[in-house]
Length: 106
Image 1 (cartoon, rainbow, N blue to C red):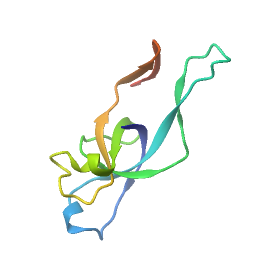
Image 2: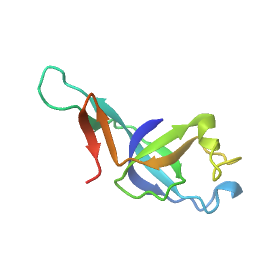
Image 3: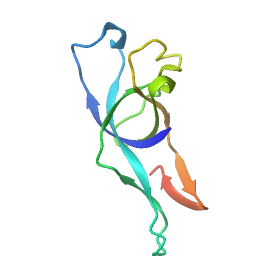
Image 4: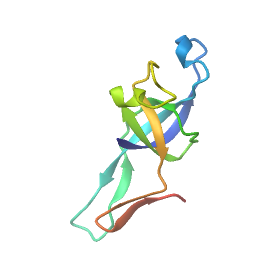
């Protein structure tokens, strides 16, 4: 699984028939930045990369989500037999590491 932020919506009027009615989002994977030389808590930072992911949970712009890729993306009831490589499978409420909160829903 990958933690990512929803950065945009994809509209494709011409697409595979099996994708009709499916919502597509642009998501940016996030990395954990842990500067052990400072006393600052680790935090999630953007990577500058973009992935198009199919939404199965009803997420929205700016939310932090969990995505899966490859064959795992086709294992949900919604995506079975769909031509999808990346799928949003969860909305993150909080994430922590070593007792530090690295993300909390605003």
